Image 1 (tube, rainbow, N blue to C red):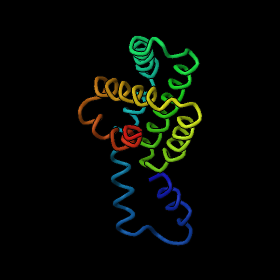
Image 2 (image 1 turned 60 degrees about the horizontal axis):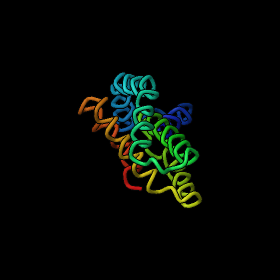
Image 3 (image 1 turned 180 degrees about the vertical axis):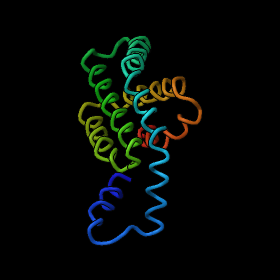
Amino acid sequence: MYLTIEAFFDEADKRYLTGDELKILGRYTLSLPQRLAMYRQIREQELEIFQAIADQLEAKLPQETQENLERSLKTGIASLRQCAMAMLVNDVGLIDDQRRWLLATQANYDCRALDVLLFSLLHQQLERRLTPKQFKFFGLFYQPFQTL
């Protein structure tokens, strides 16, 4: 959507929006208050979410090094932020680079199992903190990280 809106404005001096483009813009505009509220909610709860995840990771993987845990948590935080931004602007393509970077990191540091557990725990935290409707909607943007 972000790129679509940007294209709408780039074309504004050349033509009027078509009926279909106006519908797309209208739907996005109507959903913006809910998107903003969810974005704020995730932003405000990020520390609590990841503290709970860090505690669970340490309990489930006591043998894991502090360095690997920190790297995985930082990756999870960056990924959640990218998903939230993608949701806000309605552009799932924004997470493509983050996902590619995550896959490369997993290959370089052999931390796939740790990341899979982290994203599973993140999924649980989001399910607890978001309403079912919010969780379902946010899942559209978060789902690519569930299939690592």
